[in-house]
Amino acid sequence: MMHKYGDCSFCGGEVKESMVDLDYRYKGKLYIFQNVPAGVCQQCGEKYLTAKVSKEIERKIQSKEKWSKTTPIPVEVFSKRAKA
Ligand SMILES: [Zn+2]
Image (cartoon, rainbow, N blue to C red; front, side, top):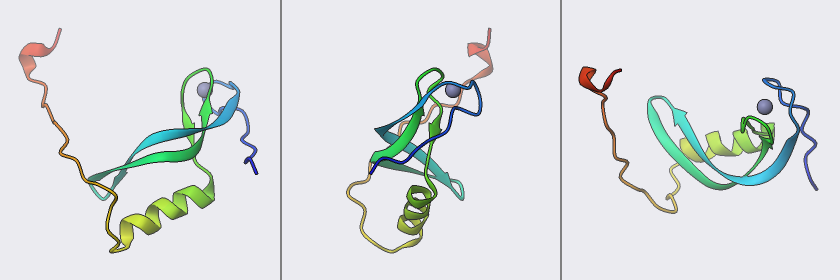
């Protein structure tokens, strides 16, 4: 059953459910969830999670379960020189 999402609270666009990759920050750590059912605004791309999905995400982070995979994430700190 599809969850009914309201209109986007930022731009009022239509929010449709699709499977997305999600960056999720929790206590300073970055987690990536793939294939997450979420509402995506067709206009601005804002993502909306149902209460059920965000609960499952936090449960997973707090559990000691093994993750499907871990990946090194390249990080670049922008220097002053790069500023316009
Ligand atoms: Zn929007």
